[in-house]
Length: 369
Image: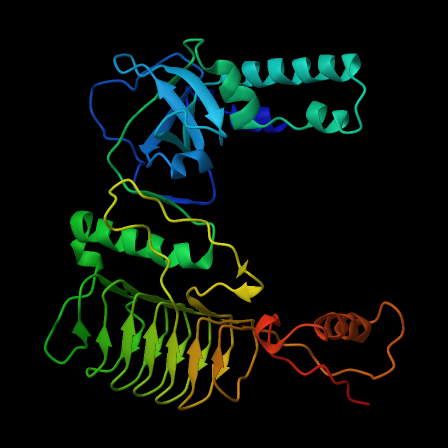
């Protein structure tokens, strides 16, 4: 059955679409007797305001101040168009399929008229923002519905912690009962902290602000956790310090260890600033960001892990700083072409010309018999 037919089962009058990368408090829309603007139109966008510089990184909307009709839309313009940006949250009527079909037919006609090496891509791929929204702007078929909720993209691990902070702050206003409170015999809570009911937290631990503790997590005596996400099954042994870090599932941090990252928050002095999409490397070096421990990572006692990314199932034996730590197995010294070890040797050979500060990670390049 075609996807269109599946979506239209039951005869819905409207359907919502939410991009996968934003964290937002925009939906659900406020309830009330007043209808959304553009009822009967093809679609409604949820916009948000950004500063003039960062607006160039998003789809920019020019809307009528009175009717909220989208008059002009440009996806990631090269010059300033508007401070109102597309947030990736949409409400469509079934009429949107007609417009998508028109775009497809137009692409097919252009393919016939223009012989191009990538023409088949234009004919087969329909881009919602660049193709559909650009055509609908100014036609009376596309509107914006402005809300005051938070919004942030999750393009990097660092932005995940910032998004968690936004959600925790939202909970403090809408569902304060979901957040942990200071209680006699319980851990010290500072700011917004979520603790899963199955987690075991020592009464001498200090958590917060902006901490999320997952299912089955164990937190020992004297542990300090701040601006971090601890996923289910993780274990933080006594007197560990975890700052600006995502601790993966079933990972273990030993006694007196310190795991810390560098926050990548937006400018606090600009109310419309968004978090920047940071690059993994800058000038040949790993960009300082939050520390990430993959699932089932073991950190020994009394070490420091700073601004590093540890891939899953890695058991560390010492301190690391500004590194991506890979877990590659030791295999045969004489690999056949295409074997796993040949890939490992290729990686090691490519790193021979790099200095220690430029290497992707710390791992054993030697093979065992």
